[in-house]
Image (cartoon, rainbow, N blue to C red; front, side, top):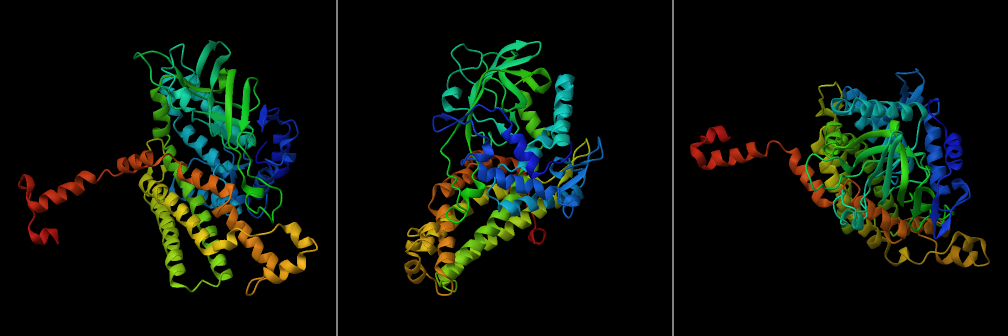
Length: 493
């Protein structure tokens, strides 16, 4: 089947037999009914409905090269700048619906899978079977509109337990090779949206080996349904609440992060994308241009979120009668400047892209990496500004139920704003609390800080992007006469 709608998404999630634990108890009710998951499921169902809207179908889908049926445009491997812009316009519709709060919206993982698919020739050189598997899986997800999650981060204890080929190590690895597939054991952290997806892509960073030339049991990539026998998901505490008034963000956008454990899980042979060669992981990421394609998707989310945050800051300032104060203007224009910079970086990435030998168009990586460096700091600064503008009003905010109690008159008199009724004013500050002081906002801030790697990783990625550094250095040396390479003043001018 081609694209799915929201009802079909919910039905697929509810019929999964996932082994899921929350707060020490096995979750046995349909996930669309569970308070930790139903708000997000409703949000993503509405997103899937968008792509089935006749008014948006041409923007959000393209004709399947296999069947001609409409499939999600986030699966499209771009071959020219126009394709890249089409992909961006599609993502803008979903990003503006969730205001950038969903870091693992379905189009993110679709983009990741697309990038690996474009690198399938790398596998062809080493294992044609694995290359066929990857291409077939990409087509399966595209043609069935599969909702994906992924797992790759391992617990510190696993990574420090020794080389993968030692008996003492409990790093995620293949413990048995069978004709029908690989038996895998190990644990992964931060499988965001692991329960609210249909399948999970597993692609860990391989651990080191004791000897060269050996088959590395920790070097693998595969994708499986999230309810295979032997798989267990353990949830963190949910920040979701049902009331859209009391908890306007977490009731809609709370993405559950899970620890997923593989206990002798048999991965079918046709779902394995590589095994044993630790260098293939880097090659898939690099030659599939994962960071460029994913970065292009992410910057669109950054822009949507920054626009929402700007609107919130302005609304808070007006509610506090401080929108014309120089201190507020100085704060908000910094956010406005970064927003314009993000838009310019996205345009630079699209216009400055290049074509691969296989004919795929890749956005320029340097502008997108620059955005990844700038946005986490902006996000933290906005959180501080929210707390500063809101002052004590951020704390004392009654529930919606209080406005329906015998205390309603008191609240309407004493909590009204200069031009807004009390209930509207409190709704705004409850939103501000979720971001600036609540658990949902704390998770968002931490998530954005490490979304695309830690600071050192992103800095190294940015440093590696600049191939002109030596040329810039040469200009300095020429000016001051080092190595006899002087330039006359007029040449410098």
